[in-house]
Image 1 (spheres, one colour):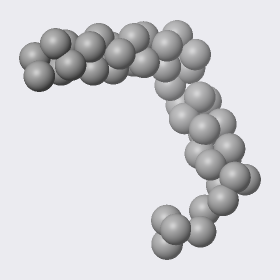
Image 2 (cartoon, one colour):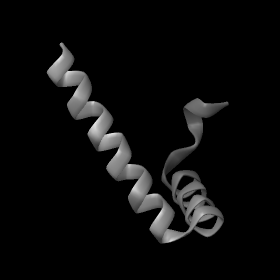
Image 3 (cartoon, one colour):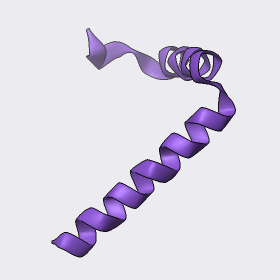
Length: 44
């Protein structure tokens, strides 16, 4: 099912996520993900 989503499906999912969470929450979430990845790399 997920193998054939394609670009239009991904864009639709991105729009839905932006509408649900808003830009501020998405940017703060991405910042937290970046911090987590950095901490993981330092730990390894």
